[in-house]
Image 1 (cartoon, protein in one colour):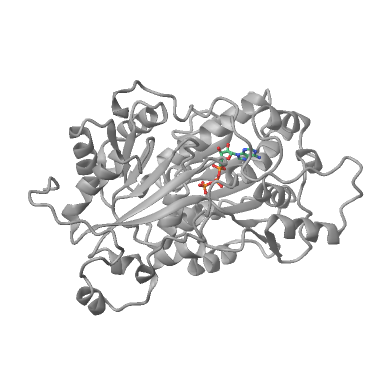
Image 2 (cartoon, helix red, strand yellow; image 1 turned 90 degrees about the vertical axis):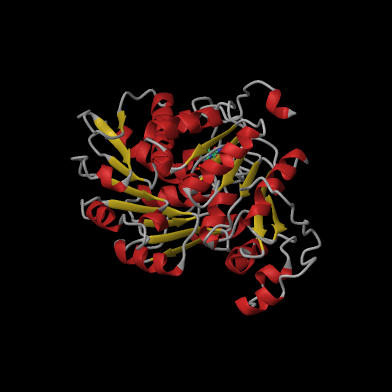
Length: 455
Ligand SMILES: Nc1ncnc2c1ncn2[C@@H]1O[C@H](COP(=O)(O)OP(=O)(O)OP(=O)(O)O)[C@@H](O)[C@H]1O
């Protein structure tokens, strides 16, 4: 079985140029193209699925090439060399908005290149000012912070710049770009020119406990603020727009807000009446090749993640756990490093891994526990099928889970997933569910096993 093979470099470590083409890059513009008029900008936006709501002056036209941006020459030259030949749609529109110094709310699908949409303007800002203008980037998890800092360092290196990217503790006085979780970022003494809130809907979530720190960051007096996310539920949109300057632009790519990427094959797998059916079902799916490694498996608590990982390990599979409460930060970093390096084949994680992590070779995402919101589903699914690669997302569910899956099933349907059982998306009252918990609902119901190993 595959578990006997040696460690593979599934993911690389992000230091090498990206091997695969851009996620849907903007088509090239011929060198003889006439100057951009507002009509041609509108046509380009339509073709690329970009919409912009601009308060105040008209928004700048979207770029076709990096050279449209009047960026520092070192950046224009480094971007293709580093694996980003042309801007993706979100980069094409959001970067010029931010470079104009306008606040932006940026909403684009997972894997669409949102990091570059703020990193390219940030690089220009710090490089062109020789570090006197600075950028702060806040992200919700340590893992995402580490990834963003690594990516920023990579690009500064490719630009031949010796400016410093700092993570906590902010001891280097030469730091031009600081990246941290909101609370930690407050330790930075920098007054930023550009403040970025990545995964902004999570940071502004009233239940997330980060609001106070985020408010303090927003009060730091940045000239430009960027709020970036793949999902934008209504309450977040209201809070975001209220936080931005009156001249803001709302940049969206794609028509469907809160939709998972249609390029990832999504399946809902009924495992049985109760929770004990899930562990054997998962092992069967792995054995059948439906969950090809590298595979990220989501559970809804650290304890459950640890249990699932332990069971997979007992079955001889290379499994590990990544969860906020599962150990010190160094343990989490080690678990992710081993997964990226191919030492671990199945990483069982809580939603700490659902946001922003770029694992380009990830083949499969499994929701062992059903996600608790459509947004979490979108972000989980978005870990797979990046950089144009094929991906699969499986959601396991029991009779108990089914009524809670409605929003998720509807989101999958909106993304064109044909295999969503219709009863999952239907507005059925809980009582009807209990009554309908009979045989053959999706034609795949398994028999309950005696002595299930999920004890
Ligand atoms: N212009 C580009 N050309 C080629 N590849 C690109 C380009 N921009 C970004 N990429 C690559 O696309 C992948 C996804 O980018 P990124 O992580 O920024 O997506 P995202 O929109 O932030 O996704 P998520 O919402 O999941 O965080 C990364 O591997 C990145 O290196």
